[in-house]
Length: 393
Figure 1 (cartoon, rainbow, N blue to C red):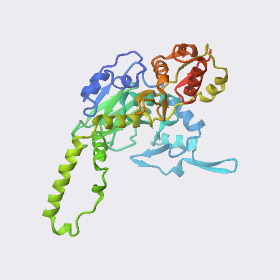
Figure 2: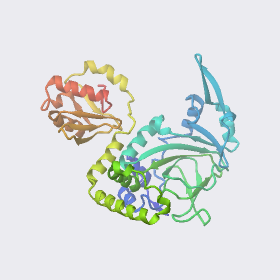
Figure 3: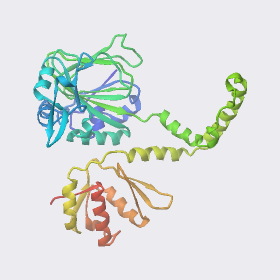
Figure 4: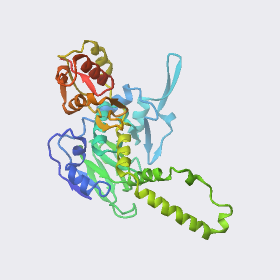
């Protein structure tokens, strides 16, 4: 286990907040070794505080399965801490009962708030930016544990994890890479602002002592080489010949089957060597860059401003927006926008590349590329698609 040294200054780059030296992390730790970083001076209170947890439970209409309560590794029955209600004539179930949730936590249960990257504004942006830095899908859960308690017994996860201590302190037992939970663990005291990276399969357990603790677990679901090779192999196996049945009576003639199998393996190997690696790699990248949920806060306000947008109007890149370019076979520009793809004519490409290259711009800034009507059509479209937002001046 390695400890990193915090920089001490606030840094909005999510990965840097989690690991410090990003290049060193990518080279020495990613997928390999445990890293403890911090505590950093900026902490993680901007992402979640105890007051935030209070408001989530008491005021935000939290419903299962977005939260659960756990004690000693077992999830408590939802009926013990939820209630039903109605909106008009429609019934709702699984609503958090604040008093009973708080009672359960006070009595030793851990509150788990799940999938927060979908609805909690600070984590929407943090998780999106972290995903784009890593190139891998992320999700975020929060764990709030009362004093002198342990929510889960020693276990390991099937994905990589960043643990971000938001408030309070918690003692973690972490078994070094390659060990099992049978050996002697390292004991790590997490203070607010401390981050821990756990590669897939690292056994760990955590408990509180004298204070209530709240931490965020960022689950990283990496695309692995196995998946890349499976996609390459899928190109090879996309052949009707591969769907023909094995010979009649094959269990009684394994030697004949082995000979036929050898022929197929040789053919597959020959075809696999001819697979266009660039095509497979670009296909995987495109899938990632068109499968990110749109972040459209303020989108309705922006649309109401579009009719008045003209040359003096200022726009900026929407925070967390994805914009990557590819060239289609017909020469048009493919614009990957996170959850969708646009195709624009070649003559629009210079304008698109200028839009992507600057953080803010006016409509008139595109006059060297497009006439007034064309630039208004393009920019209004990009506002509707979620790439740009209108600046209120």
